[in-house]
Image (cartoon, rainbow, N blue to C red):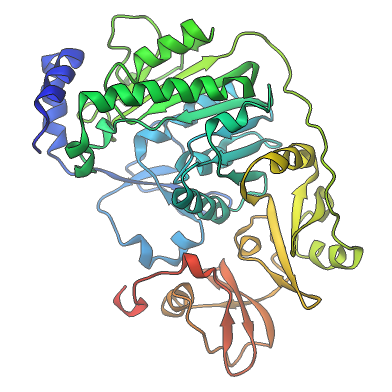
Length: 451
């Protein structure tokens, strides 16, 4: 790997010669592959090579073709870089009661899906991504994870300033110069420059200042990057502490994990993952607390259109715990909205660009209900609500390719298709064929016969 001379000089000065040489050697090795299981859907055994700072996560010996596994598309696990799973330690050590959480720069969804698995019962997550294409990927991954206490929105950081003191926790995995991804991304190597580092550092401060009003006093800011330089890491944390009055908090970690502390001579607790020392790509994280100790701002209820009683009765039978939801209309879609989050979700929906909220249950067409794919992915799906048809791998991949299927032995009407007992989506059997209801934009592009 041919590194920029200025990058070498700056990083060697920050790391020290010995640490830099170990790091440089690691860059020439193959990146690790790690996955994290969705325990609400999968009971698979962890492989022996576990990620030490994250539960339900392990390293794979080699990278398989994930596209060829229907369980990947069903949200049974997520392919996530191991270092970024360190966020779990923040949740375990500092978040013990229900919280409203904003994941500000959330695409493609690794941290959002991880948070949905970790947060205490009764919590709510807002996953945001301002870039349109990336926001669609984020929505897809959140929907596949299957939790109903989530929203996906597409907004700029400044759009959240109007929600004063609304969030208990804000996670900012900030856009950065990407030095930590050099081993996986040759483009990041080519694009690196000192001027880009400086530009990223300025942008990070703007993002943090923009979203700061939305964090309640006493709330937590989790700041992370996938880069190494001090301007975007330690210096940015120092800026938040000095300019915004945040307290930098420590995390209890194990020496076995190989995490590197603050490299600027400060005692401020920050956590660096450096290839060669930790088993993952480059990553930096800091936890900060906003001064004060106030409760989150009460959400002002926004009036919503309630679904007609007859439709509510039909769709509520599709859920495990129907009494826990309000049933509202959003256009021609019936959405099951958790009652405990109804006010907050309605307020946020009134001011943000929403791509996904709670659990869309069905679209209403010609007075008939067509269940959504989000329902098939949801952990709230009543397993007895629909006739199930188990598919072998080849037919499951054909379905995910969005081909019409022949299911001659299945009854007519809406069917829930499963693979190894796990729902992968709905189809409508009309006799000579089954219409494929898998989302067109999610379909596997590659011919299933080649997988």
